[in-house]
Amino acid sequence: MSWITIKTTLFRAEAELMQQMLDNHEIPSRVLDIGLGIYGGQSSQAALQVRSQDRWTALFLLSPQEDSL
Image (cartoon, one colour):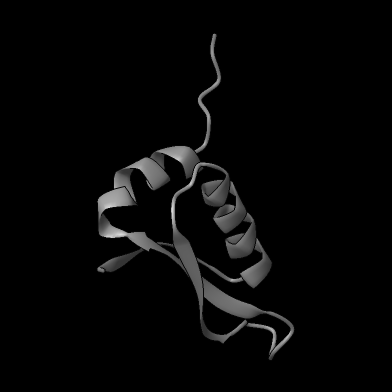
């Protein structure tokens, strides 16, 4: 199975929240730690990954909603 990173964040909790959103739509995902945060360990940077075939659906679900006029 091939995984692709669709989002990186300074806060692991943010990546975990996005992972929960994808789980609600039955899209497999994983969160990887990619290093210490910029404040010396107060948070950890993380990457959100999905299977390559789910990339576009995940990006659509996580994209900001447009305001209607």
